[in-house]
Every structure is written in C-alpha cells, then in structure tokens.
Image (cartoon, rainbow, N blue to C red; front, side, top):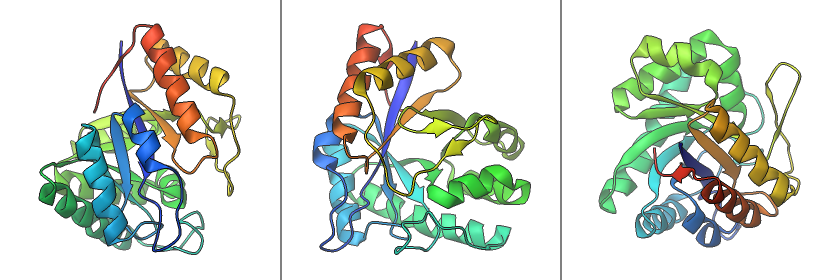
Length: 232
C-alpha cells in the first residue's frame, strides 16, 4: 500500500500568520501552496516553497477564488473561461517560485469554494481539467472528478479528508472556522482509507487548530500499518 499525505500551506499574508508550516512540513509528502488569491503573498510563497524543497516535499499550486477577506470560502459567479484564467495565473506563480528554488510544479488543487463549485458544475470541471492539461501536471481532487480528468487526458489523484466530515451524499462539509479533531480517530480513518484503496492522497488542513498533532498521528498510524507514504 502507498499513499500521499498533503496539506494546504503558505496561507499567511503580510503580518498575519496562519498555521505552523515549519512544524507541519516534515510529516508531509506533498504541499498545496497558496497562490495569493485566497491566502499567501509572494514572500510567503517563496518561503513555503523553500521549506518544501528542504524537506523533499512535492509542490502543488493551491488555487482559489480572489477572496482574501473570505479566505476563498465564499462563492463567486465565474464563467468557465474566468475559472481557467484564475487557475492558470495562480499556477504560473507557484511554478515560477518552484523552479527558482530548484524544484518543479507537480500538481494543482483548488481551494475552498472553487473546490466545491468545480465538483458540482460540469463546465467548470472541464475548464479546470483542460487548464491542468496545459500545465502538464496532475490534478488532486475528490474521486467524483475522475471522469472529467479522464476526458481531458490528465493524471488524476483522488484525495480524501481525515479532518472534515462528509454529508449523506458523500460531499464535504466545509467549516468556516476549523475545529480540533481527535488524533487517534484521524489516524484510524487514514489507515482505513489506505486499506480500502479509495484514495491516493490524504489531506490535512494546515489551518486546523491541531493540524501538526493530526499529521503526526496520521503519519505514525500509516507507518505502523505498513503503508508507504510518498509524494504524488
């Protein structure tokens, strides 16, 4: 069994700090680096990429709606063309910093409301996947995005969240403010998903109040279960 462990990082902005990226990074194999629209800025982006390179963590572009005040978790009316431009613009920024740091852009993952909007709208899903195809990287999203990714001919990695709940239809229940989670239960959930083989990557939110504790618990539980944790 093998699995990737990713987290959303680099979401601080200016003098405002969110999460403890330095403490979280050693437990990860992939980092979704905020591209500046929902969180992050050029200086934070550079430091986050450098931290990922230091720890051998794969770098992805965490792209969102232009909503710094709402942290990208408020819906916006965007056309497929507008979404494609947002994704390409932000991914280009992360790719530039990655290459300047001697690394490469490996994947794209939408953030917040963009994430749920793309899952729910076939036209937006198509625009996202076609843009990822232009970038030549992988797409990291929930399993229901697989058909759109296959149609665009891109590499797709299904992910699941061990620090969020799902509703009766299997859709994520997004929290405006992250709540602490039980590390033991989170670790057991990760192992169950690894054994089931339903996802190729597990995500932990970097802005969670006990994100580092959760990441440590998940990594330890996966190791104990004999799961090979490695980058995308």
